[in-house]
Length: 66
Figure 1 (cartoon, rainbow, N blue to C red):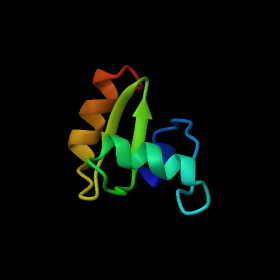
Figure 2 (figure 1 turned 180 degrees about the vertical axis):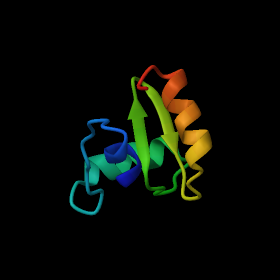
Figure 3 (figure 1 turned 120 degrees about the vertical axis):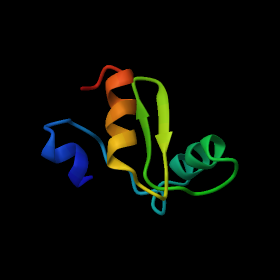
């Protein structure tokens, strides 16, 4: 994700098309939907198909990632 890279935040990208177990995790956290990106930030799940940079940055700060 460009947003994380621009802030120097390390992340692992997982292709849910290639890893069915990852798709199951994403759907578990999103009411059965395959929303991307879905991020696990220090145990806090942040997901959304309508990316809001300000809200995401707030969530990252709350999780201690920024």
